[in-house]
Image (cartoon, rainbow, N blue to C red; front, side, top):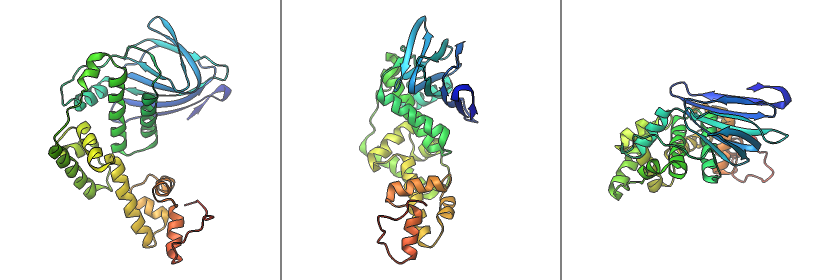
Amino acid sequence: MGTGAGGSWVRYWRDGTRPVEAMHARFRDHVYPPHSHDTYSFGITDAGAQRFRCRGAAHTSGAGMVMAFNPDEVHDGRAAAELGYHYRIVHLGPSVVRDVLADATDGRSGALPLFAHPVLTDPALAYALTRLHAALAGTTDPLVRDERLTATVTALARRAATAPASAALAARTPTDRARRQAARRARELLAETYMEAVPAERLAAAAGCSRFALYRAFRAEYGLAPSDYQRQLRLRRARSLLRAGTTPADAAAATGFADQAHFSRWFQRVYGVTPGVFRNALLSASLDVPLSAPLDG
């Protein structure tokens, strides 16, 4: 993280294997000169407001709004409010966008989308981009990143791109039998390898369908995304380790969570108590956990 004058700060993340980047920043006095990127760039203004010129016109993005820049599209940028603005932005190379859309359309679309409006008021897109940004900058799980990348790119293409890209995403619905078979094959692989970092490509290959089709089939069949199902298996394994007397720190390390804090947050979210409270209750031979129990793991 870099910190500048006036309380400004920047956090930056980059994928080491493909053209995907993410940045989170707070600016008050910083002024971007006219420039462009060789990527698609999608931003969300979290607080405050920023203004910029693009395509010969002035635009303002306030809190909750989405910015969409096509590759090589020249724009500048500066604060539009006295206290500045917070924003996060994701840069996606054209090859990444093309790959996601080709997968989502079973190869029917090789065309790149064009985003006609630099500023969009669309809570669904803002939510998708926020979740993608959080996954890129905050987790090392490839399955979570790939799922959110696919969900975000397809949502952007459907809701904000020009008609050809949007029309190409008209979903083909697999038969019930094909859907069940694909979901079952993916679930079997996850059951065997849930401790591993399983890329979406490997899961789709095992299921015998595209990544996009697998995501839809798995949710329809089991009510969870594949990454959520994988996390559920890890949490179940962690519970069994805690029952055997393993410490929360060791259980977190043994079940593939990034760290103990990450493990504790998910354990409490799913089971209502922290790993420490759960283990201590078992060790004291009582499952009657008082409401005043401390919520630290």
